[in-house]
Image (cartoon, rainbow, N blue to C red; front, side, top):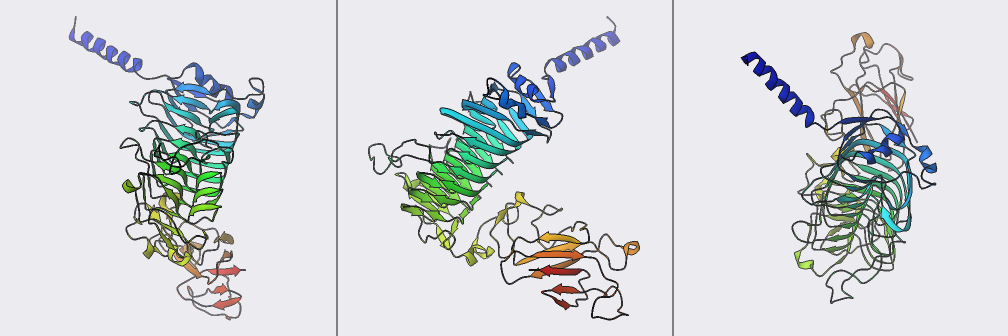
Length: 497
């Protein structure tokens, strides 16, 4: 055989080997295509357009979309949206159980509805983790707006039910809506959650699990009372970082604005909560905390809560109760607002602060305001991934790349007392506009009422100022019906009450 022929055969062999080891790619363009994933669980899938699943309300004898069991492939939504997905069954979730190394990413849901029957459990996207702890599952950049009804167990949440497997990761994902279950985002989590959020209402009054604690000394854990509800997670054994919950949380017992129960089961299940916050209002009977209902051996680090806590007894502004492993826990560099919460005490040696202190960055010694947190004057800290300027920094950091702001634009300042708006507007005219020049105005309000800043173009003759002024000084600021000249700020602003 000639050398050239050998090279050709070797090349063909390599090509066949590569092709044979690359999973097939299936394109999905409709809701039936999503349902058909159940027929090939290990393939790679891409969604190619927005998908209307409104007809699923009529599928399977009105039970809707059938959960896909043990998915082990890749589903890339490519940023498209699935609308009006409907599911009605006992154990619910678009994916029920994840197997091998599955990945679900870049996907949005709008008006998704899950109705849980027969005391089942689940969530919109998934329920149940991987089937082997040696594998890893990844869910990234998935946002869901919807509702979950009928959850009665700790394995019910809005985004997902049971996040199982210590190597499973959920990142950059969010749920907005209403949940009847244990957690707004996830019911129970053993895995890793980072850069995620829940916004909405959680009703956990139907969650009737029982477990142990100080009134059941022989068992050695938490409390022999029913119930478990958290604004973000109901029951956490895993690790949560850089996440938040907002809205209302209502439950029976063991209720927290962020996590209902946080329980350590050794190094595999550390129950760590780091760099997170909750503004959720908390309501229930007993064991209610603005951030955590109860904690057994878990660490809570660099966290805060501001929500009102309303309960009959055993309550805490930040954390309500510590379990029998209380000697092993640490709650440090964490705070709660003792004015907005209505409470001045908390378990876990957490420091209560006034609203003014909570809105002062000096309070948060040791927090990372470079990579993780941001803060505006007279506002609480927020996570940097929530909102950034064009150069990836915190908004208003003094080094902003100001985007082009259309003239005659209303900007809602959401009650901020101090805020800054920028505009690359050069009063010398469009023909002489300098893209590197930033004309910025800082507006300082003394109250916290919502006001509107209206950014306008430069008038040819500012009222009351006469003619003949030299440009670029031909501009003025209007605040509270009073005009004030400022040679450095060349925009017209009208601040309306």
